Length: 337
Image: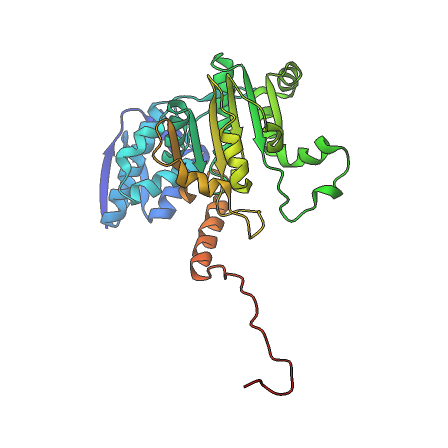
């Protein structure tokens, strides 16, 4: 057991790092098995030498973020602890990035992980960006935030959000209403993100003016989309032909973001995912970026990350079996020699 004294410049930053009722501090102490106390304008960290060293680096990184005005919550703390354990503490400063967009309620939207930061930078720098990763990594939400920011800055004239209406176990035909009513459930995640960014009234206004379009992928055929920010969501459920059709819709002054999770493909077994093909075909082409987010970039409830990791372990141990036709059986009484 050792004790390390850590000098701090401003105690208000320490209070932000510790969190309400020291909830963030308890996470650090529990995860690393250390004890942290503030005395005489300094932090005193006691525990095993390696754990104390990790705690000092993690707290130092959190203090840097607090000094730059970043919000510190339990999710931030756990992510910083993970980066520190992996020896990436020098990259913590990169998390203090610029605000991508401000929601209708005044909440600033920022990248929360290094993977998200790379993803947002790629969207800003490239005409076409592919964001591939598991559920909860912010692929769609951050893309919509970038689209709204570009629209507000008058970099584009309209926002087009689309996704394939592929049935994931449910039957589309049994849903009530006309065609638009039937496909609306498939587009709900895109609606939700837009409502959050713009508010329902502003969203409806832009929708009526034609500045915002939310439609199934089939509606994109035969069009050329100029001066638009186009987002293709759930791209893992596109066919090879659909993906090629979509990519050839890009017009002048447009930006495209394609998001998908190749571990959640709902296509029939005999169809190849257009996203998988695009990842191979487009790799290395100038002005096209392919960003791969991982379970470490999950920003939903921490159980989501654990669930994703558990499935990854299970899938490695139990790879899906290739369907094989049963061998012909001799149903006669005697074998033919």
